[in-house]
Length: 128
View 1 (tube, rainbow, N blue to C red):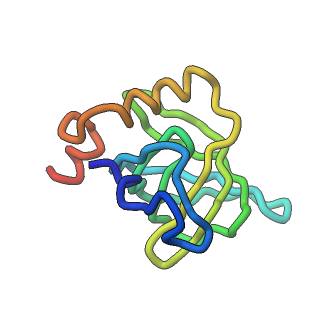
View 2 (cartoon, rainbow, N blue to C red):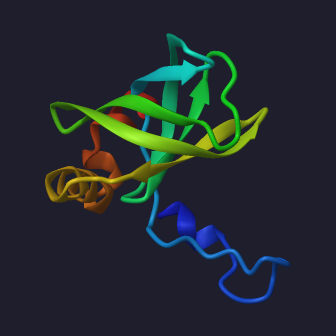
View 3 (cartoon, rainbow, N blue to C red):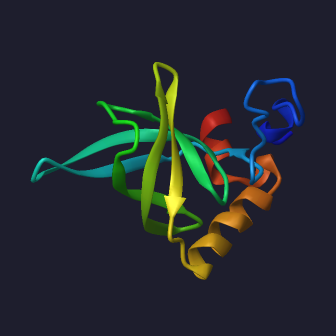
Protein backbone atom coordinates (compact mmCIF):
# COMPACT_ATOMS: atom_id res chain seq x y z
CA UNK A 1 0.00 0.00 0.00
CA UNK A 2 1.34 3.45 -0.84
CA UNK A 3 1.97 5.72 2.12
CA UNK A 4 -0.04 8.62 0.72
CA UNK A 5 -3.23 6.66 1.37
CA UNK A 6 -2.67 7.16 5.10
CA UNK A 7 -3.02 10.92 4.80
CA UNK A 8 -6.45 12.52 5.02
CA UNK A 9 -7.77 14.03 1.82
CA UNK A 10 -10.10 16.76 3.11
CA UNK A 11 -10.42 18.76 6.29
CA UNK A 12 -8.99 16.29 8.80
CA UNK A 13 -5.92 18.45 9.37
CA UNK A 14 -5.85 22.22 9.70
CA UNK A 15 -3.67 22.54 6.61
CA UNK A 16 -5.73 19.99 4.62
CA UNK A 17 -2.44 18.31 3.67
CA UNK A 18 -2.57 16.22 0.50
CA UNK A 19 0.52 14.73 -1.16
CA UNK A 20 1.01 15.64 -4.82
CA UNK A 21 2.76 12.34 -5.63
CA UNK A 22 2.33 8.81 -4.27
CA UNK A 23 5.17 7.61 -2.04
CA UNK A 24 6.65 4.17 -1.80
CA UNK A 25 8.91 2.73 0.90
CA UNK A 26 12.43 2.85 -0.52
CA UNK A 27 15.57 2.25 1.52
CA UNK A 28 18.98 2.97 -0.01
CA UNK A 29 22.12 4.73 1.26
CA UNK A 30 22.17 8.44 0.40
CA UNK A 31 24.93 11.08 0.36
CA UNK A 32 24.12 14.74 1.09
CA UNK A 33 26.51 17.45 -0.15
CA UNK A 34 26.17 20.66 1.89
CA UNK A 35 27.32 24.21 1.17
CA UNK A 36 26.82 26.56 4.07
CA UNK A 37 28.72 29.70 5.08
CA UNK A 38 31.34 29.12 2.37
CA UNK A 39 32.09 25.63 3.67
CA UNK A 40 31.32 22.31 1.97
CA UNK A 41 30.96 18.89 3.52
CA UNK A 42 29.23 15.56 2.95
CA UNK A 43 26.95 13.64 5.27
CA UNK A 44 25.27 10.28 4.81
CA UNK A 45 21.90 8.78 5.52
CA UNK A 46 19.31 6.23 4.48
CA UNK A 47 16.23 6.94 2.41
CA UNK A 48 12.88 5.91 3.90
CA UNK A 49 10.51 6.52 1.01
CA UNK A 50 10.48 7.95 -2.49
CA UNK A 51 8.11 9.85 -4.76
CA UNK A 52 8.46 11.88 -7.95
CA UNK A 53 8.37 14.98 -5.76
CA UNK A 54 10.97 14.03 -3.15
CA UNK A 55 11.93 11.56 -0.45
CA UNK A 56 12.13 10.98 3.26
CA UNK A 57 15.42 10.09 4.93
CA UNK A 58 17.24 9.45 8.16
CA UNK A 59 20.37 11.59 8.15
CA UNK A 60 23.65 11.28 10.07
CA UNK A 61 24.00 14.91 11.14
CA UNK A 62 21.75 17.91 11.02
CA UNK A 63 19.81 19.31 8.12
CA UNK A 64 18.38 22.81 8.28
CA UNK A 65 14.86 23.64 7.21
CA UNK A 66 15.07 25.35 3.81
CA UNK A 67 18.64 24.15 3.16
CA UNK A 68 19.36 23.27 -0.48
CA UNK A 69 21.57 20.22 -1.02
CA UNK A 70 23.02 18.09 -3.75
CA UNK A 71 21.90 14.52 -3.10
CA UNK A 72 23.39 11.28 -4.43
CA UNK A 73 20.53 8.81 -4.63
CA UNK A 74 20.97 5.34 -6.19
CA UNK A 75 17.89 4.60 -8.32
CA UNK A 76 17.55 1.70 -10.79
CA UNK A 77 21.31 1.11 -11.20
CA UNK A 78 21.87 4.87 -11.65
CA UNK A 79 23.54 7.07 -9.06
CA UNK A 80 21.43 10.19 -9.53
CA UNK A 81 22.90 13.53 -8.42
CA UNK A 82 19.87 15.68 -7.65
CA UNK A 83 19.17 19.05 -6.07
CA UNK A 84 16.71 19.01 -3.17
CA UNK A 85 15.43 21.40 -0.52
CA UNK A 86 14.77 20.35 3.07
CA UNK A 87 11.04 20.76 3.72
CA UNK A 88 10.86 19.30 7.24
CA UNK A 89 13.14 17.94 9.95
CA UNK A 90 12.30 15.88 13.02
CA UNK A 91 13.82 13.26 15.29
CA UNK A 92 12.13 10.65 13.08
CA UNK A 93 13.53 11.80 9.75
CA UNK A 94 13.65 14.60 7.23
CA UNK A 95 11.64 15.34 4.12
CA UNK A 96 13.28 16.67 0.98
CA UNK A 97 11.67 18.01 -2.18
CA UNK A 98 13.42 17.58 -5.52
CA UNK A 99 14.15 20.74 -7.50
CA UNK A 100 14.55 20.92 -11.28
CA UNK A 101 14.39 17.21 -12.17
CA UNK A 102 15.06 16.42 -15.81
CA UNK A 103 12.48 14.36 -17.71
CA UNK A 104 14.86 11.37 -17.55
CA UNK A 105 15.35 11.68 -13.77
CA UNK A 106 11.60 12.02 -13.19
CA UNK A 107 10.98 8.98 -15.41
CA UNK A 108 13.52 6.82 -13.53
CA UNK A 109 12.02 7.77 -10.18
CA UNK A 110 8.48 7.27 -11.51
CA UNK A 111 9.34 3.75 -12.67
CA UNK A 112 10.61 2.84 -9.20
CA UNK A 113 7.57 4.31 -7.44
CA UNK A 114 5.21 2.47 -9.81
CA UNK A 115 6.75 -0.95 -9.05
CA UNK A 116 5.15 -3.40 -6.72
CA UNK A 117 6.96 -3.30 -3.35
CA UNK A 118 8.27 -6.85 -3.61
CA UNK A 119 10.05 -5.91 -6.86
CA UNK A 120 11.76 -2.80 -5.48
CA UNK A 121 15.46 -3.19 -4.62
CA UNK A 122 14.95 -0.81 -1.72
CA UNK A 123 12.22 -3.00 -0.26
CA UNK A 124 14.38 -6.11 -0.73
CA UNK A 125 17.01 -4.45 1.46
CA UNK A 126 14.41 -3.58 4.08
CA UNK A 127 12.88 -7.04 4.18
CA UNK A 128 16.07 -8.96 3.35
